[in-house]
Image (cartoon, rainbow, N blue to C red):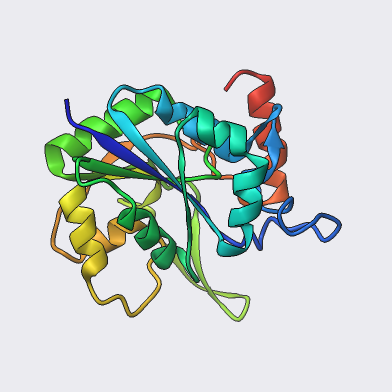
Length: 232
């Protein structure tokens, strides 16, 4: 059986989520409680029960790592989680996570710590696609009308045909994602598949819907609480 490592990206600044009355740590999305559990733990639990997931790495901002290890010591020890310090941006943080991946792993799944609603069926499907193609991600077709805007004015209406919104998990052969991160990266890519694409490697899209919500704003948290209440 192929072995999968999970890298959970929890090192972001959560600037779009922040509320001034909260402390710096409490304001960050992954650490907010949702239905009695922190969001990051809800994410981990979706993967850790799977037989093929044999390594779980949590990437946390350097300023939060001591607090995180102390506050969640029981969860870390009970679930045998590895906690590593992230970097200045997402690329640096995921690179730190990749350094910790065991050479015994065949695949690496990278998941946002603010997406607690991914389903077991979605994980199964994207894992299977990665084993077949080498690289795969969950994505949803764009359904809204897309406008290109400059200085608050519409420049053009963009066709949504063939446009998909990338989600996570994004899953790659270990050697492939390591090679992708060895490239010289001059810009700041917004996801890991973008780096793999630059190698000329096809990335399989596994269709899903907007139920795999990423909690980005306070209004997203309101929706997330509703989803938990109704059993998502």
